[in-house]
Length: 411
Image (cartoon, rainbow, N blue to C red; front, side, top):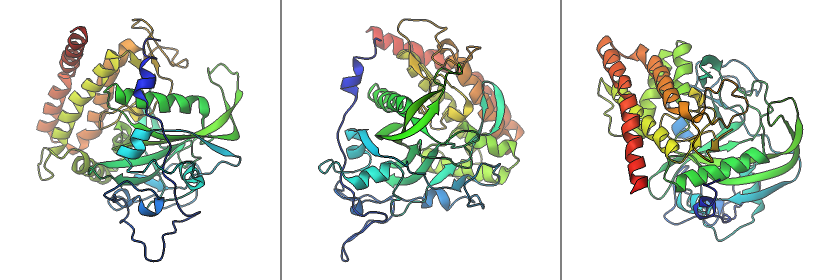
């Protein structure tokens, strides 16, 4: 494929700092520790000098009142507290991103191969200041409302603010079952995890907004998968990716609240997202939800135009996979075109070719219409009319941005 030569140049490999302690953290009696989620001025060489926090996610919202980890319909919350399930067999560190560890997580690369780091990134260690969470969300899948979905095999293990003042949310993928696992086993396999690790880092270095991958571990645990959805189930090895993003909230995060009639919680979540991630919008502005929508629409158009400029097909453009921050998330059956083909579909389960690469722009419009539908209970008639006009401008925004990128490529 034409994009493969980019990968070696796009990826920065390395190993991470040693961690300290076995289960909890174990600073020396007189050692100082940063407050949860705060960063030291220099990169931490030990996890004793490094901390996460879940307070900013837990304090504003009610949490699932049921503590037990079993599949169920969850209401009136944003998160469920649920701990990762460590692998039963041997676990090995396959790769880390030197760039993510050093420049996002402030971890010194000098000490590598620590068993404690391996335990942390494989879900066996909870870092000081963090509470593992699974996010409740819904979504439209292949055009139809699918109801409650949520983090079925992922755990949000904390928030870190680095030395640049950037706020990053850390999430393990493949780390076990949650209340949102439905019929799944909570695991990811090495094959798909390697793809996500490589592609998310490559997309970043290609200049496309994306979640990042910090580490990848593999176990000897057996995980059974039907790779091509043809009834041929095969045994594969389980794996966990530690991935980071400024936020993991997606269109489906708002949809589930609107569909459930939880409008107070919808308002609180929107206010949180705006305050944390859209600083140009004043919190006392009565039009803040309209301003939020007017920002997300062009940013989504920009993201999809960037996808198209490199021949990237996401594969599963459901509303639960569309970030409210307009970054690429949830790498599943994605693919890159070898040569131009608007009917290119990397997802073998997409029989109707809904998410073929030539449909991505129109699917973006569909998803934004569902975002607007979720926002409408909080908008007055004038704001609804203005929001509809903003949505009508999506096509022009997308084509204008794509043509600009294409002209730059030809220069």
